[in-house]
Each structure stands twice: as structure tokens, then as C-alpha cells.
Length: 412
Image 1 (cartoon, rainbow, N blue to C red):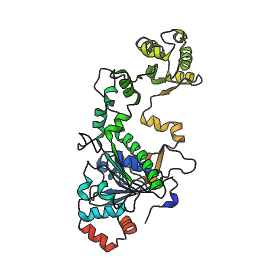
Image 2 (image 1 turned 30 degrees about the vertical axis):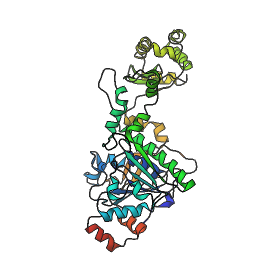
Image 3 (image 1 turned 90 degrees about the vertical axis):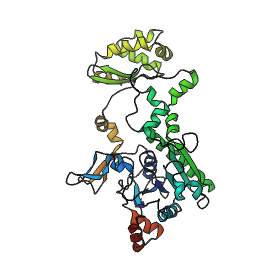
Image 4 (image 1 turned 60 degrees about the horizontal axis):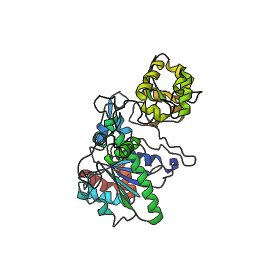
């Protein structure tokens, strides 16, 4: 039984991916490509599978209210995939994976450097027989450099990249981003690289290996703060919710909570000052231009903060919107999913899920909107080995007797 191509509308329909990744960076990349229409075959170790299946609670609940084997974490990055359980540590298992790779356009893995070479599944092992294969290797530190053989995790990447040193309230301990953002960004970079390499392959017939590391991608998204340092030589520091290069652009306390004010240019500052009833701020040469506001933030921000504390959130939002001054609430995640805009953009989806007592699971939607080839949500995150028989029969022609022999020997 192959993928239901009738429901596949994305631009990658017809592309097949062999996914030997686990945790988050690799699965983020392959889920994104799956949403775009690719047939993703997730290879997992029999009896264990992706580590994140056990990263709970919370877990999906069955009809009795008991936990199933699938965690919410696992669900977050594994839809639109088919799971085949194969033990690559056994020669027969590695041989099966190599045969599957021969029928795929893309191979994605996140083993340690040299990890798959032990099984004859490295890029160097495959490239002669599969010259058109796009092979993406995701590791903590990349394939080169003094740290290349070290294990890498999102938390370590956040720490080593410098992002934690500028996150948090000034004077407090360094703070990580609330989600594994290094993994997520690495996965997005990986998917971009894969598509570029696929374009090259389709044009020339030549495959290649993509080498991408968590720490590299974490450094890459330091953007303006890193460039500030490279330009000035001054090491950026924690600024809490303030911006390094724009003022006022931060969270402010108001009479009934908190609000974000994001004044992005001098014209907006004029209108913001008028709204506050303090037009003299925009006329003051210390604050008229953003450059001067940045240099004098220690004086300006307390003046603004004192005024905003006397106003309510609703009063500020309703007053700034018609003036074209960006402002917004600080939502909880529950608030975010209740936002009409988030609902209108279908950023929460539901998929049928037989193992759940409710019959479905709610997931985060894909943010990409195509006018002609929309993303599709075809299959929910698979159970471990759910599609092993189908894939081995359809792609490799293994009959029931051979599959039973492989199961008995622990290969699948």
C-alpha cells in the first residue's frame, strides 16, 4: 500500500525521502518536506524508534484515558511520514536500507560523524552506486573541525552559539529560548539546502552531500547582534525585552498587564508621542531620531514606562492601531491559538488518529501558503513500524514469508 497520492497536492509530490533522523532537527526538515508533498519513509530501530516517542508526558490518551506510546513531542515533527522498523546494526538490515535508498531521491540522517559508515551507509559508501542521491547529514558541529565527533544537542548549541548570553533580564543567569529553537532552525536550513541540491540534481543529474551543524545554524541566526559585535568589537549583553538597535521596541508594564510597543521608525515615534500626550518627546533632539533614542534609552524609556503604567492594554492597542504604531499583546500559548488571525491562517489542524480516544490529534499547521500547490496533511505521525510490511512489499518485493523470517531474526 503506497502513499495516497490523490491527496498529495504539494510541489514535492513524486519526491521520495529516506529519513534516518530522530529527535527534532532532522524530523523538522523531513516533516516540512512531507507537508510539501514528498513521500517520507522514516527508518526506526525495532522496539525503540525515535527517542522522542518517550519524551512525555503529555502523551496521547486512548479511549480509556490511559497514556498511549506516543508523546506530544513526537507528534510535533512526524506527520506525513511512513514508519519502517529496521535494525541497521545487522548486515541484512543495512542492506535493506541501501536498497530503499536506491529508490529515493533524498537521504537525511543525523547520526554522529562516521556513525553510518559502520554499516556501509555513509555518503561515501553510497555515492558510486547512487550518483544522483541528495544526502543530508545533520550533526551537532558539522563534519569538520575539532568538535566534529562530539555529540550535539539544542541546549548546547544555544549555549555555545552565544544566544543565551544575550537572552534574559540584565544581571540574571543566561536563559535559553523556550523551545529547542536551534534544532528547529537547523531543520529549516536543512530543508532549504535539500531543495537547492535537488534543483541541482534535476538540472545536472549530480547528487551531493549536505553538511549542516546545529552550532553553525545557531550562530547564523544571531543576525544583527553578531554583526553589531563584528562591526563594533563590543560584546552584546542581556537587554531583557529591549532591542539592541531600536527604541522604544520592548515590553512595557501597563495598568492591567503587559504590552509590546514596537516603534520602528521616526514617524511612528512622532505618532506614538502624540498618543501618549507627550509630543515634546518627538521634538526633543535627544529622541527625535532613532540613533539618538538608542543612545539615550536610559532616560527615554523610564518616561514612556511611567506613562504607560497609567493606561490599560485595550486603551493602548485601540489607540495605536489607527495611528499605525505597531503594538501587541504578550499572549500565552492558549491565547495565541485563540487569536482570530491564528485561526484564520489555520495554524491549528486536526488529524484522524485511531489510537486516540478522541479519534484525532491537534497539531501545529504549516505556515506556507501556495496558490497552486498547497501543502497537504495526508497521514498522522505513524506508530513505530506501522508501514514496515507495506514498504518492504511495495518497494523491495519482499513476500510475507521473507518478512516473517526478518522479523524472527530481529532485522525488522
